[in-house]
Length: 125
Length: 125
DNA sequence: GCTAGTGTATTAGTTTACTATTACACTATA
DNA sequence: TATAGTGTAATAGTAAACTAATACACTAGC
Image 1 (cartoon, each protein chain N blue to C red):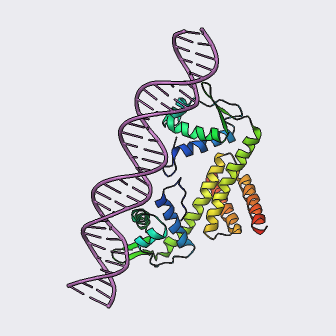
Image 2: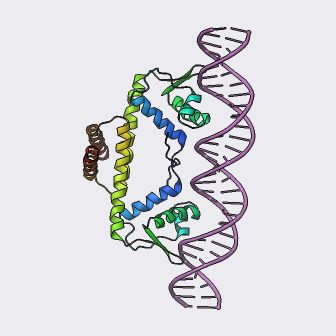
Image 3: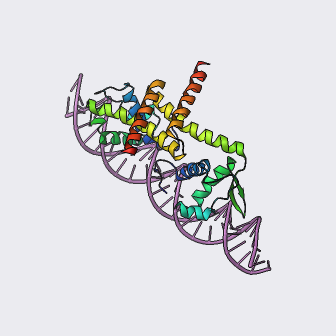
């Protein structure tokens, strides 16, 4: 896995697991790969995996069962609000940063639509 | 100044100076505060300021003159593309992250407009 | 020339994230 | 009950960012 060296790896792993849950690669009740396996898959140390997982357990996104494994929560309310939260956070960060640059809400929309148009042309061309 | 402890301080200082230039608190040819003064203002060490500035000099956003100070470039082309680049990067990061979450372009627009509507109501209420 | 103000360099020490390694605790099952 | 698979804990060492302190190099102005 590719990591951004400006952000702690354990934090990027948390985001990665959020993503896997949101796009339903991991479903409610699913067992995650063993910590040692995740360490191999993501090419990091077990302790780093553990740090990410322990925060996710703290947040009750994962349930851990000693001797058995780590499991995605079956609390659907939690999972729905997880997606909502992660998506909104992305938008909020972008919006706040642009507002700091004195970009108005209308201009944010303009920039985004222009960007998406350009992206679409690129992806098709 | 407030720093996010997930991102190196020197990097956040770079972003801060970009911002000061883009919103024209710093104009072409302007002299920046002395490195020791910036260190006091931003409550960090001189070396940390130096690291941020040296990257900005490397990028030719700033010009340094030993014994005189650090100055904003007068290369207007550079300054225009700086704003363009910083804004686009914000949009791109958000867009890429949401795409990873299998959010479609149309949905990105929907989420953004919903968010802005909610923000507007909050800010007015 | 001296001095104050500027950027630059160096060295040492602290903190945090990460790695490496080993050991321990619990569960399931052959 | 022995063993393999799981999570957990602890210790030691490395690297990067940051701080602290000092010294050096250049510029301007008295």
